[in-house]
Structures are given as C-alpha cells and as structure tokens.
Length: 218
Picture (spheres, rainbow, N blue to C red):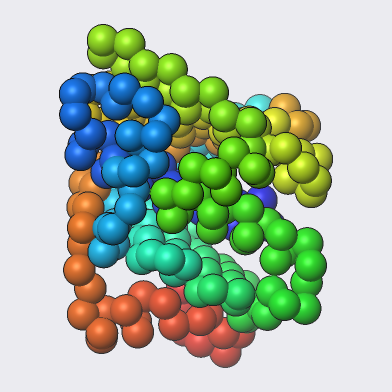
C-alpha cells in the first residue's frame, strides 16, 4: 500500500512540475497558482529514479522506471531496475504485478486501500480546498526556489506518512521526498518529463490494462 501511495505522489509531483512551468512570474508566487497550473492537463509521462532508505538495510534501494498519469484517476508505474514491476490504478481499482505474479484489486471491498487512493486523488485535480482538508500544507517561495510540504491530517495516512516535500527551482520540479513515521525515506527525481501528453485509445488500453496473475512478465 505504501508503494501505491508513493507512486501516486510521484504523479502529483509531475503535475506540480507542469504547474511550475506554467506559472508567472518565476517561481510560483503562491500555492494557489501552483494548484491552478495542475488543472486541464491531458496526461503526463516521465522516467524516474527513486532511492529508498530503509532503517533495517545497510544500503539504500534504487529503483528506475517510468510513470504515466492521465486525469482524473489513472496512473501506471513500471519499474525496470532492480526488478520488473507494474502498478496500475484506475478509479476504484488497482493492480500490481512483479516477477512473482499479481492481480487486480477492487478498492470498494477494502476500506483502508480506498482511503489511501481517495487521499491522493484529490491532489491531482487542482482542488486546493480538498487538499487542505486532508493535509496541512506549507508553501514557500523565494527568488529562485519553491517548496511544498504536505502532512496528512487524519488516519490512516498520518499513521504511516510523516510528510511529503516537493521542491522546485524556477520553472522546474527538482525533487520529491517522502518520509514515513518509522524513519524510512524515499527520494525521487524525474527525467524526460513530457507534459500535456495525449495518448491514443490504443496506448490507453495498453498502459492501463490491469495486471493479472497469469499474465506475462510485467
């Protein structure tokens, strides 16, 4: 479930990168301007490098892959290193597959999973009121940098997530950091970001097909 939330926040970061690029002047003068820049995108696609520091491990884990988000509620995250995995979220369903197999899950039958997904879906739609209802927000901007800190206001997220920090410089999103309440930390950077990406019906069908246990490799 934490992987689901981290992937969703990565999608949010890509949309915020789009917002930063659209806002004037540089950097975004307010959280309102940043959120306004999120509205109306047709889709976002990027490569990512994710580094996860786990207290019980001596060395961090680095993951590489691609992420795609299509509003209002479709997200696909595929990793190629260190192993191949595929996570798909479409509305109230999500599916995950790794080299051991996987299957689709109906979120309506899992209140905890549904709450996780509901919490991040509000982030993708540029709804500042909904964002602030679910998160304590801190936005700072100066002549060259901006940052947005999100702290979950209610359970179950507040039991697991301490804060998420998104940072940018001028028109570019530079980093995302996810800190968990147990001390684990995940840092993500993005490469080759394509904003306002328009997908064909065939691409959408391929990208958001739910993983199944008897499918081929992720």
